[in-house]
Image (cartoon, rainbow, N blue to C red; front, side, top):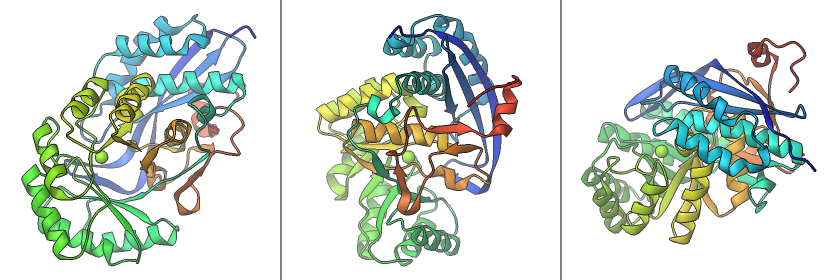
Length: 370
Ligand SMILES: [Mg+2]
């Protein structure tokens, strides 16, 4: 088979209001302001990619022109050399452009695996065809948190991630409210750099008094505070995940060398695909557990994350729930199902998620297929 070349790349912004604010320590989002990339191969195969800026520092206005500027480096090159394409893309885009790296890489890999007629998960190794996500309770008052928890339980989901890192009394009340909402729940905490290590240890002690032991504490110290993460891991009695602290492979090597965490939260929006693969490999070699997460993403990017985790295998924590926040689904295809299930088995090729006409129209091209 003669491998086609990358013939065309287009990028558009798209906005979808959220049902309720997605609030974390440091900020809240009421609307997803994401980017959509369309890749076309020389044989006409299309691929789609999505980028979602982070809540705290994402600026789409910078990402769009940055991505456009690197398109000429990719165009005309054979898609079979995908790894070299993605590495060149990462290099050209530079640091702080994760969502652009992810969106372009996603569109290229979607197109390539659609051309190969294999699901993206098979491309990444085919370890599994299903993953189950947790669902998040964001920073909200305890009563609203309990209501969210009951809604999550009604979806058949047993793993709830709770955002903390704000006012500790409020945080404790929120965690207790969620804990009390159902039996047999597994609770994960995410402080998003909002607590110092000392505060995180204090918080864990307060929860312990209430008989609550989380299954994971994500980012319980500020971004650069490796010693703090290590402290919480050593003295907190629960697994600790690095999220904000690990943006790329270099951070992952530091985390592994310092034995600072027991889990790493890999996000395509932080690292893109090539570096995401490197992070996973370093973590696995170092015996550090894998988690996949995302920003506020539609089923397209979350679906790509599900393929990535299922294909590589060995991910203990799956956090791909943000389609539930979208007031409408701009995509068709793969959906987050009951119990938090992403069932990839029916996907015949690529990610298996396609933009609906409202998004296709953004590309102003007659006869644009999906
Ligand atoms: Mg996190």
